[in-house]
Image (tube, rainbow, N blue to C red; front, side):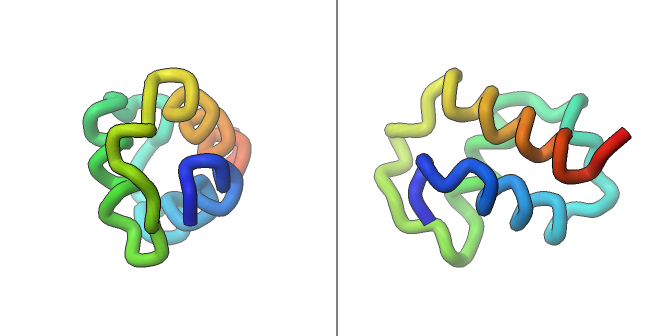
Length: 65
């Protein structure tokens, strides 16, 4: 997975962390969790605030209300 795979990343996070409320996640934690995903294979430094915001929103959408 690459940083651009926002929905795939969000789905993986939702599956691997079902007890985490994505609305309460700090970006530093989110970044660390993304780069720790087994299928993640991209430059760690490319995960800036905008992409993390997009991943967080996709994760929120994935888990629903």
